[in-house]
Length: 217
Image (tube, rainbow, N blue to C red; front, side, top):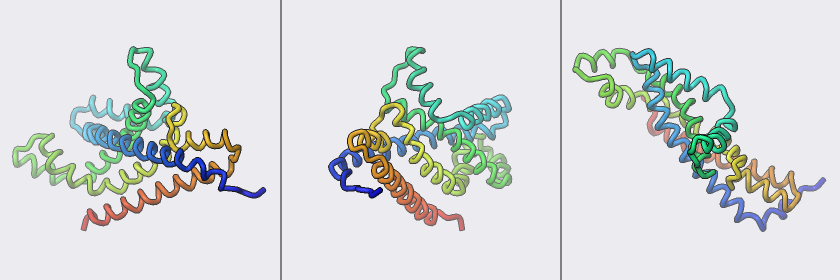
């Protein structure tokens, strides 16, 4: 069997649009997931035990259930409660919430990695829990968390392929559409896989440069 990638050339504009959708959804998803994850991780180390257990349960459920099911619950389940979201919003919300579970654990680990003496010094200065967290702990912890959060972004780019189940025209959905027209299954999905590889490689390289710049001496 000979592979003929030339059959894909007329559809390059579709692939480009799919790439743009994938990048946008991944970026917004990790942005929302990171912001939410920082709060979740901060709550995980609070002295108030009920809140800690609640956040631990939140993370446990998100990490223990498939992203596809979470997307279905948001897009197909919420309308039963009177909440109707378009596919793009539901998709970004879904991958963002899913990501927050992983980021929350990353944040918890980063916060717990800050020496306890920092907490004690802040307490002696009369700072509240949230003042200490905002001004002293998180700035130090984030530098240590950056590699793990970067890996989460790379993972999210790949997991964003599940957005195709909501009929969102991301890279994977475009690949399915092109395959249905050209019947070139191998060529189409090899090309799609290579595009994902390029996206994750470029992202990993950019994050490595950022990590080196912020590297803790």
